[in-house]
Amino acid sequence: MAYNNYFSEIADGKSPATYNYFDGEKWTVSLSGKTIDVVSPIDGKVMGKIQEVSHSEIDQAIDRAKEAQLSWKSIPMIKRAKILHLAADWIRQHEHYLTTTLIREIGKPFSEAKDEILRSADMIDYFANEGLHVTGEELSGEVFPGYDQTKMAIVERVPLGTVLAIAPFNYPVNLAVSKIAPALIMGNAVVFKPPSQGGISGLHLAQIFYQAGLPKGLIVIVTGRGEDTGNYLCVHQGIDMVTFTGSSQVGKSIAEEIGMIPILFECGGNNPAIVLPDADLQFTATEIVKGAFSFAGQRCTAIKYVLGMSSTIDELLPLVVVKTKEIMKMGDPREEKFNMGPVISDSSAQTIEKRILKAKADGAKVVVGGKRDGRYIEPTILDMVKSSMEIIQTETFGPVVSFIRINSVDEAVKIIRESNYGLQASVFTSDEGAGIKLAQIVDVGTVQINSKPQRGPDHFPFLGIKGSGSGVQGIRYTLEAMSRLKPIVLNKPQ
Ligand code: G3H
Image (cartoon, rainbow, N blue to C red; front, side, top):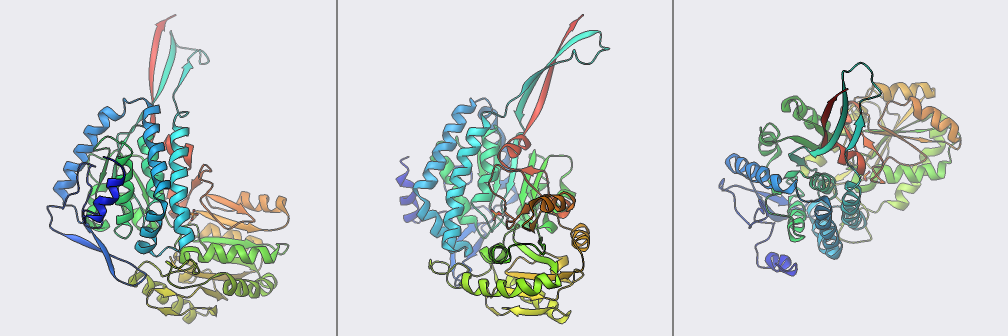
């Protein structure tokens, strides 16, 4: 099929917005007869529907994926890589269409949505290239004396089988690609569960892999509600690995259910920034604003609280206020002049508002923002926050940043250590040596010195400890996680 037909299919109404692409064969409706409305957070209008796939269809889908994987794993990796590179090219060619769909579906501002699409294409290319170097090895047994045979291990690297990839609403394309591409290049099949909000973008993405020549059945797309479809998938006997991005709460409940299969989880962040007295405060203020408010704070790597001595915060806070007003422009994210749109849903907006009000009632001071108009929440800065408050104890997936006044750096380290989260932390200082020393004792996955937290560059290791995740992502690390070693030992009498 010529690739242009992809868009004419959508124009004909056979669009992912209504149908499921299932195994890449044809657009289908679910036997369940149920669909889920995808409501744009921008204006509350239904922009499409996704199918609520039934359990019996999930069973069929997983069988289909398992069957497809048997031949896929034997295809030379360079051929698999070619398909992935083609998918990356098609994403680039259709970047505008994918960007505008993403903006409408999740309310992501234009430049961030465009970045997500282009970063996804680059990520696929990188996975495809790096996959060629993630191979097995040969080991000699001679170094260990005491065996009556000469041993040599041929350590093969083999796929895991069928990987369940559960993507979140905040990066429905990029955090789907970060799971699908490595799984495929390493020879696995993928059962892809897109988020409901973000499901349309997810279906487009899966279709692109098929348009690039992926053999049918290697990505089976299962749309539905997390609490039903997601739960059923996670405990399915046909799944050999689960890779998930989402809240810590959901991550923990999945981990408790699934038993002894490998997992790769990226969960909530609730990331702190420690500002030392010698930091460049103008620069720090800009990083805090961007770190806290990009995509309305709906990033696991967002800065959620700032820890500094009272005198530092007295100087820093007015700068953060000025920069928030200068940098953050809230409005319809389809217009390029706005860089902050709505949060994902009414219920999310209500939760964020409640958390702000609770913090206020507990003694926090609202320095800027705090108001909500439907799903649009002003960038909000809270001062006089205590580490015991709910706003610090629980990640608030919205545009809120809290300032905690500490008496010593040790106190900051203790607050972070006692947190249930441990994704990233930032340290702002003009003394890199002091920054490194502090980084070595801060209890999180990654410490950023003089930058807001962030996942990229995508080949860096990315991991959370405590409630923030399990396993290590990053191009090479994900490829290793999505394959396993299989030693075949040759024995010869001495
Ligand atoms: O929300 C979680 C994402 O992995 C954050 O990625 O740091 O590139 O925004 P990012």
